[in-house]
Amino acid sequence: DSGVTQTPKHLITATGQRVTLRCSPRSGDLSVYWYQQSLDQGLQFLIQYYNGEERAKGNILERFSAQQFPDLHSELNLSSLELGDSALYFCASSVDSGRAAPDTQYFGPGTRLTVL
Amino acid sequence: AQSVAQPEDQVNVAEGNPLTVKCTYSVSGNPYLFWYVQYPNRGLQFLLKYITGDNLVKGSYGFEAEFNKSQTSFHLKKPSALVSDSALYFCAVRPASGTYKYIFGTGTRLKVLA
Image (cartoon, rainbow over all chains, first blue to last red; front, side, top):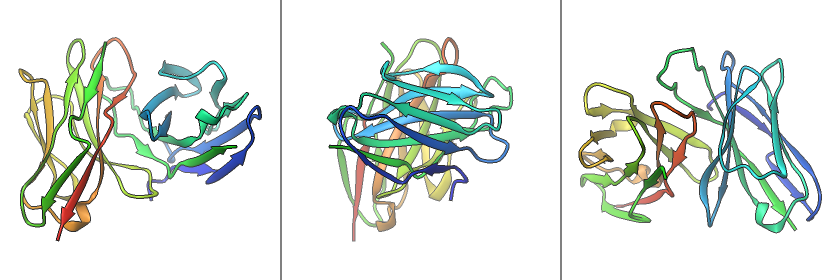
């Protein structure tokens, strides 16, 4: 168990809908990362938040948005869902203690999103 | 463009034999390099990372990786494979400067045969 929790485990929804995925980082970790894993695109980095602020943006669609709250949990919002958004969405967290070198990322178990 | 390549979709090895999972990268400047493993229906687990210093990095479960700057490679190795090592392995890179973005390879499925 990595200490990172994600809810829900599974989500089934229809095209055009909006969903919210939730992530609680390990205690003490300031950074949260979101990833999308699909069969055809592999593991894609979406976005990173550090202590409430956006730090890095990857291949995140405009229909997707994220935020990190004062208690450091994070939510990933996916809207106007398309069939191609079906994937496993992972959250990871790391301490990011202020050193230049990156700290280890610890991954949650993922949320499996199915868009019908 | 910055990228990570894992040239083999699958690697098969007999139990007890040495294993190698290949990774090459293309980034501007110095890289931070990582290996993660994913077991079925689980999240990724950290194996090891190269930050600086000794080119040979030792990690979890007896795995090690060698950073080769001239060949821009970071191959994952283990002297003696176990059936329980069968999983999906991901190489990742983050440039040391200019961005906090992580780039992952497409993954290599390792199958260790008894």
